Image (cartoon, rainbow, N blue to C red; front, side, top):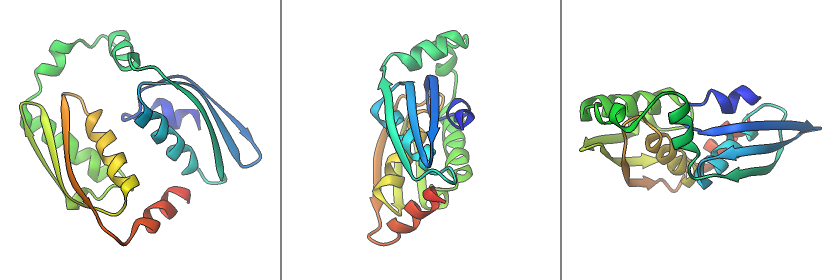
Length: 162
């Protein structure tokens, strides 16, 4: 399960430890934001056999900068990405994610600011979509104009739990 956090391109986490007790996962370590903490919890809940998560992850806002620095990335590398490249990366990531409504989401990028519009099935999907886009290389800001459909929310929650 640890690889679920380490290799997820949308989750910036460090020193994540997962302890399993019966059907409960206990998460410890560091993430870069409250959204990252929530995403880690949802990812853990999506693992078959896990019915409960105790989330003891600590939010460390400078963690993302530290991870990029360790990987040899600096801000100049991110500035080189064009708006078209960023839009294509965002669309690809939304389509590849089994929970997000990639085909229903419109993506527009100007000056590395991504505007999202369209419809999603639940508030949880809206938050996940925002998080995916926010952590896409080159994105400096996300403007979220997504609408949540009144039906279908339970279906997304069920997909995460399977």
